[in-house]
Amino acid sequence: MSIALVTEVVMRALVKTAPGPGLELVDVPEPSCGPDQVKIRVMRAGLCGTDLHLEGWDDWAASTVVAPLVIGHEFYGEVVEVGAEVTGIRPGDRASGEGHIVCGRCRNCRAGRRHVCIHTVGLGVNTNGAFADYVVLPASNVWLQPESIDPELGAIFDPLGNATHTALQWPVVGEDVLVTGAGPIGVMAAAIVRHAGAKHVVVTDVSDYRLDLAKVAGADLCVNVARTRIADAQRELAMLEGFDIGLEMSGAPSAVTEMLANLNHGAKVAMLGLPKDPYPIDWGRVITHMITIKGIYGREMYETWYLMSSMLATSPSFADAVRSVITHRFPAADWAEAFATARSGECGKVILDWS
Image (cartoon, rainbow, N blue to C red; front, side, top):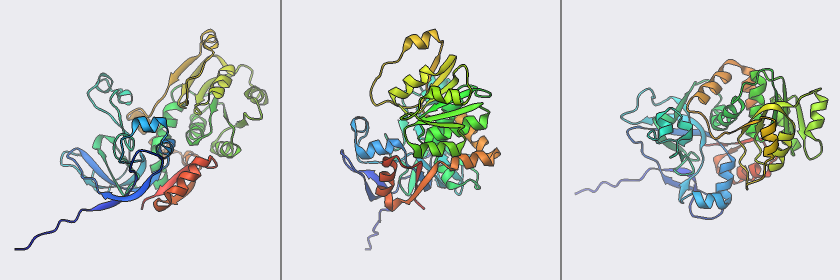
């Protein structure tokens, strides 16, 4: 009698193997595809600040993640398998993915506000993610891409979506816009409001390297607030009444204070930057100047995705502005160098090549 031996199929994956600092690139079993899921061969993946938190194992990571876990949530790749209940998606399709997996049953989901689902599960945070040869996710989270799209652009739809959700929260045509924080999302937000018709676009940071990226992406004026005040920028642009729109991308308390001090009466603020600790706000100014503040998290499903796809498809110059945010590329095997580069701050968006 012969005995058939079953060999487990494995893949490369960047894994938080145990609680504590560090990651390991190891072989793990390839994920299986459920009836309502899609399996994607990852070609490119974007490195996010969340991934740095997970690698460094700060208090947030320790309270959120259960190891072992494949991390990563920004990706682009090729569909290789679809579940029996999936329609409209076929093997060979190119796709990105929405990293927030929602329940579909809570009040917000049933009302069409899926981006504020109270049971959201994060890809690469609460469930195995995309820093791997293959990733599996619900078909409803798959965003099909045209074959002509640059794979690197496809890999950063998640942060581009954060920027789009924030930048287009308020009408910006003809408005003076202040962006505090020139990380990759802040730089992309500057490109978006420039594309959408803002009058003046001013970006602040303490890194000249990142401010140079914002200038390339379309900012009219870049202000290093370690040396120059935002009020000086207003005078340079001959602005008389303060900024109409504020986009807070830094999470820095000092940036919020400076922003509020330079807004017009009736201004509107969209806040995406997550602070490390609570901080005071001048609520007297907010109230008496009738400033509207709105917190932003993730992307609207899936209106934000339609918006960014349309902007990229119809404007080569906008696509170039977004692409300029990508400054470093590494093979997946060199993940440690990629993480070190991202942590240095002397970079824009960092891409891992899994092909």
